Image (cartoon, rainbow, N blue to C red; front, side, top):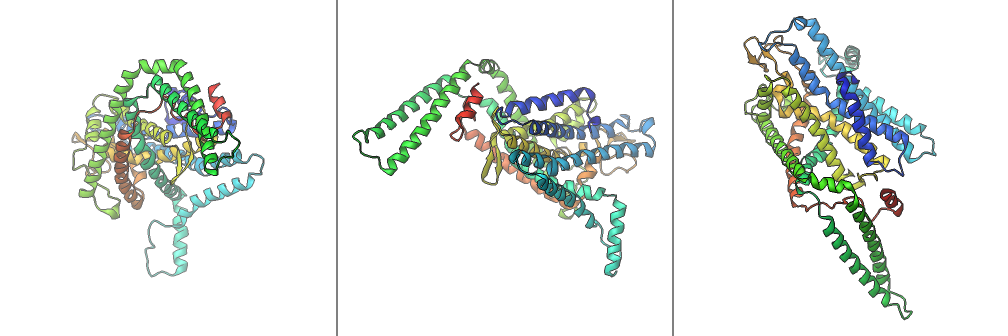
Length: 501
């Protein structure tokens, strides 16, 4: 599992996952099993996202800059062995994601929800769903029987012959591809919004603490004045009307929230984090400008790539597969231009992959966990419920499945062949002979089923639309409060005391 990640990065990934989960985890409701599950799931998501740069590096490393194969890669058997190793790496990591999404995370979720009940039935149901999900594609042959006039028994025999010859890999590929569709929906929802909200929040910054405290004091005085007016109505012993009693309850609840906001603002003013954040304000602005430029570059590149497919691909029945790039793709050209300076192109493709992951995390953190129009959980520092962290990690695992196709859409030629050239000193493309260039396993994995590629293509258009909507919404929003998400009306005093202490 971790052999594809450089040795020195393993503790860094684990340490980052531990810090991230502990930062958002509720101290009061934390559970050891849910914490370990969230940390492991997040680490698996980061490690899986790093497999694509490794895949591209391996196919590029097989050749010299002049287009000839290196001595150790000159034989077809050696190249095939390396390609199979990478392919099995994809299958292994994606299988672990399937296991986490269908069995491990749901079991831990139900275990936390109802500790005192017997969860063996829930575990059995999840395991059954996983097995059905993995096995059902094996009964859908990818090719029709050679003889259309064959009997039903001959068709059944053909089905089992196909099942035996595939060794289950077709079933696993189909299951992963269909699960990637859910990841596509998560990318459209969270990643597109995160790409817009993350840089704009860095640029706009937060509101002034002094101004917020003054505003909060004025609101508190106004609410107290309204409460006194309502209580004055019953000073002579007369009962309040139903409407006044309801208004009094609402005002007292609002006053309680304002008192808690006041305490949090006082704490935020004294913390060193606020002072450090103020000192780093120029750096945050520069970082925000850089991120918004990167997001706009991705938007333009993805639009050009989709437009190229719409104009020059083989059509919807082939999954909009395109042979070569007919329109200038800025990101693809940038990666190809960086190839002579090793290892800048690999560093850039790794940064792009991590950018998708971290903007997805930012989108989930700002939006929370939603089921259609119903908000299930909020993601807040030191106050996030264990169930919410499990959902966050599950969504990230699904997003990682779709990340490879997103990056392929941004740089199709580079993701297919890396920095390979063939004997004529020309960049490898779809027009060269198969034995002259090696295609990445990621590309073959993405285009195994044409109908999934078709759905992914239309998903890219939806991604562009949601990004524009998120950009407009983020621009129209004002600055965030310095205690954003720390105080809500539905929080209990116990959770408030937990954060304060």
